[in-house]
Image 1: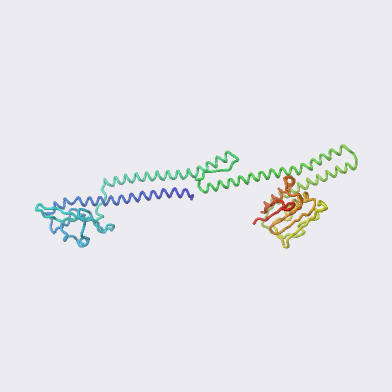
Image 2: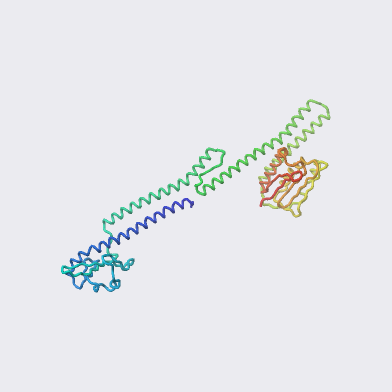
Length: 403
């Protein structure tokens, strides 16, 4: 149950228990007071009946006994002597066989003082009809008060529960860009719901931006070779020279191959994401990394070195690994005119370190689609990706497997 509900119900039950306890104590003390008054009212009757009494004992009612001498008292009462005069005393007050004793005295016409002990059982008298009417009326008032108090408590509880939900509903309907928020005194469950809604909203916005950037870079990668094809086709009609025609055809072929490679990469991404199983571990061999295909694109003063840890294991399928390395190595080749490009593969991390111009705003834009592809595949297979500048020269692309 919610913490606030427990608190409200606890208050209501505590208040109810306190009120009924007070009411019960009032009934007990009221009963005792009535019994004392009833016992003392028989003093005059006992005094009037004294001349007719024998053996100093008289029973005005079936419940009350009058004793006109200490010696006439029963043994279990006499052992409690002395009793306070003109006051009701209790014997075994909380027992079912308890007694009330009223000690008094009166004088005869002759001037002789007579001792009087009036005794009654503490269970001998109940409340009268008039008293019960007042008690029932008081009970009814208390019950009405408690029902009202409980109703107000429950209404407050439901208001506290529903108010933040209504607030969240209004915020969802409004569709505003700001984060969801509720009052600080809202229950913990609603606050956690709000926190998760904000997190999902941020994830949604981030994914939407990633999709937009992905589409932007993909369209840029396709737009450039298309422009080359259109331009070369237009130039072919302007000049019939054979060498010129061959040159334009080569430009068209290169642009078409570039478009084909881009489309293949995009299709492979979709294919790999639809068949993701990040828990499969496979052994990585040197043959999985093909270095020869990069020789034609490397500058004469640049060397490409690949280190694969012995018995290296990874959860990246071969196609995904090649796609990631291909993007990172091609980016490194594009910005490195001299020095080296070092690729290191171990169980939990992969690094591609170059000695190029380093990471700048322009190079980050040029690498846009490739880096987006790498980041997307890393997220799918639970790897982190970072691209940082080296302290000396160049930059380092690092992939770390998340545990």
